[in-house]
Image (cartoon, rainbow, N blue to C red; front, top):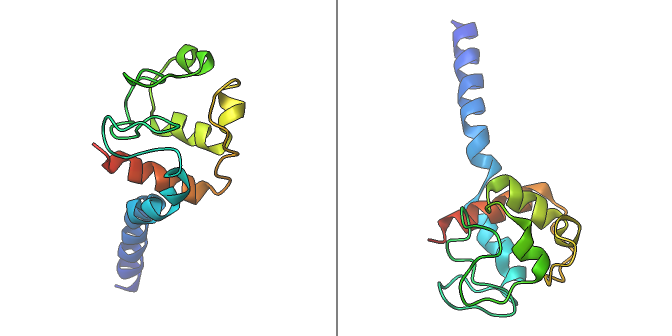
Length: 121
């Protein structure tokens, strides 16, 4: 009986872990540093492009925003993995990007920001 209860508790913990790995509410708080340059409103570009609908969008293609040649040439789409790599060190992943931001060193914060970005439709 104790073994079954322990197994059930471990299984519940394992199932809860991925949900805890990405916290959109925490990501919204961490996103505060991004708001100086990025809007979350569709069609509202600032120094950086609007991030509404960014997850899944082709890199460097938002109409109405003037991307660097490096960003336009990057190719691919903004997947979780690409966002994570980019947000770690933007200038290392896209040398020549206009985004003068050092990045988010904390992996948990990056995952939370990505979870928040997924809510922006």
